[in-house]
Image 1: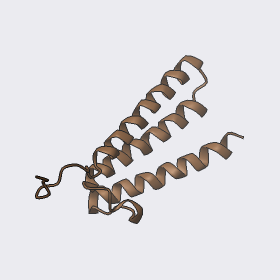
Image 2: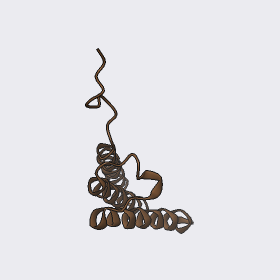
Image 3: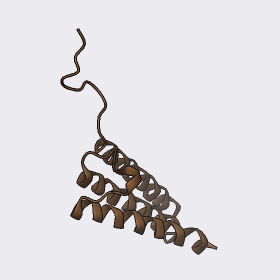
Image 4: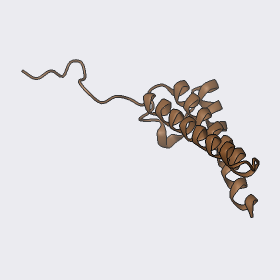
Length: 104
């Protein structure tokens, strides 16, 4: 029963990691994210951290049997996932004051 949940999550993590590697090495971002992403390499690093966090959580959820270790591993995986999302968020364009569009 474990594998029905673990395998799709690990495959999703591999797809996210492949997209992150493409963003880091080539500057390529998925077409749905091309407009808002300003720094594709930073976005790729965020994707790699998020993919690692998903795999980290699966390892601590399914492989380890000690409850205390499982809880701390899951908590650290969640912190890594949040870090990856924040890094991806930092790579987006900021909408604010644009130069040359001052109002009198």
